[in-house]
Length: 501
Ligand code: NAD
Image (tube, rainbow, N blue to C red; front, side, top):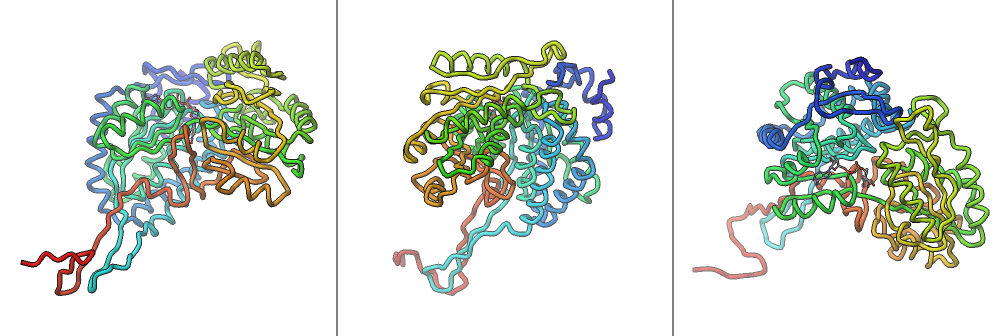
């Protein structure tokens, strides 16, 4: 088999045997062409891999953290050297336009840089002891095997957010990528192995990838040797995974669905708002967890804003994501297109007025699923608006008071990202205050998507509560121990308790 991906995969270090002759067919969402046939792992393979990861952990945890950082630094170098190839593979397999594919790999590079610095700063506190001659401190120590389950729409960056931190924290990683994007996972693993080969003394199996469906994921989820399960995907998946990990008292980091809103107030710079909303709603064909799905606009500017959005929406160039100039690529598969159509039917039934949303380019790409971005004027926040449909549908709503806008923003099951466009400092500060947005991300005068790696990323409610990436998200990948050291010749008990014979 020779496809456009064969050369790319070879350049990235993936042997042809790994992507041919397997039972899992991989199709490009660009045109539906088969681009690989990978070998599926089963639950037993996962169990064996966890054993290898556990053995590797016992050695890796004793390597000084800055030396662990050196491996991540080398991996970052491999990513830099292969950025355009890996980005192109992301475009071919996940359908992202070129700049977004490159942005995804840049995000991996950024988190590597962040993790390298972090490897010299995995600090705890020194705490004043109430007892004389005593010192109290806390340490963060390596946690164990980290299982990473990832979604199709960020096929490689999500793994990097987790693994770069986990590796400097002294953990080992097991990756179960989306069954829709195994090629980018294999390529990432190959680049990681290149870094390992340049690093003296790395234990084998620091990071492994197992391609498979939910059953392989479940084997990871249920195994007591996996100290942390970091799972990114739909709320449906999180509902299945969370309780299973909890049942064995494992640690879980959930990054699930979003239903992100932008509030636009009367004082907003509408030019800025239109640009922010367009990218947020329709970039990545609406297939980001942080995609803007709702606009909540003040009644005084609603009609003008929505008319401008509708005009701009109709001008967005849809087509192959690897052709220059196109801004909207395909949906991942037919199921995604069908879900989009079902949502538009429901929106009409619930009083919505729909523009766009039809299938396009069907003649050119009969095996692929391109959709015109949809804008739906809704009379109220009905059931369909509260549901995350993973497609380019933007619902618009009107509000009268800021309290009402914030209540609408918060009145959905998900709590990932949110934004306000305003030039009124009172409105901006209220939105990010305790009585404002209830999301993990609340922005002012920028959109809901496109987070930087320096901040902690994640959301509340049905988004799962996990935090990844920057700030102190690293603490999820370590175990905290509190140590009291007595350097006196006495043994005073805390709280003045006496226990002398
Ligand atoms: P999905 O839930 O269908 O699949 C995600 C991953 O979970 C896949 O690897 C899948 O094989 C695995 N999985 C599914 N059921 C499982 C089970 N029972 N046990 C173990 N593993 C299981 O999601 P998707 O369609 O690939 O991605 C889209 C969804 O992901 C959207 O809801 C989106 O909002 C969400 N997402 C969230 C974030 C975030 O950071 N919050 C980031 C990206 C995507």
